[in-house]
Picture (tube, rainbow, N blue to C red):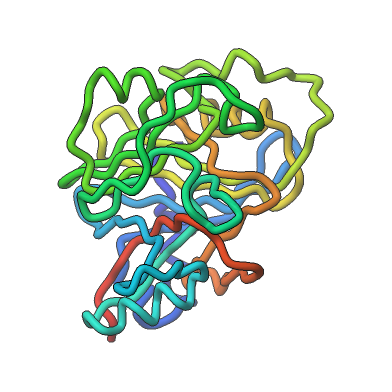
Length: 249
């Protein structure tokens, strides 16, 4: 599934005004009995950013708060999703870079929870491209990311599922994540509509979205902002948020 353009055109027509100008395409998809919302963008043609704090250092935490903050520069949030695990104070658990400034260092050692289920990875946004790296590959390559967020586990690593994913797992959550194409242009975000296993979610990125590398963002704490399809998930404050920015009408 290389493009989402067929259904996306109809969704844009029904979406909000500034969303219609964005470079994000969204649609709902099904695979192996599970439902997903999928949004795709071209990293070379879109303004893709990460958001955590406002100018005073306060956690933004909510999609509408990010959108309001962008209004000051004549911009709007065309798409957003929670983008990595965080502590109780909303600070990122792993490596985090925003506008070239590092807030949290790279974590390479195993640990508790899904984040520490190695291999984990880093979503790196650079000029005109974005890539998902396995953490040790990221450390070796040391790319100059304008924005970066570390999360885990990896879902797909060079076309292969994470080795710890079990087909018969009974651990099911609503999950979200991101996959990237090999050329660094294609970026695909997905969130399940129902509870899924890691194996099911990773298989969706590998077999349907066909992203050679994909990274898990979170489970249960999984939300999306997609005006094109009239979806704006709310709830308690989040940590890192990834978004596509567009001009505000």
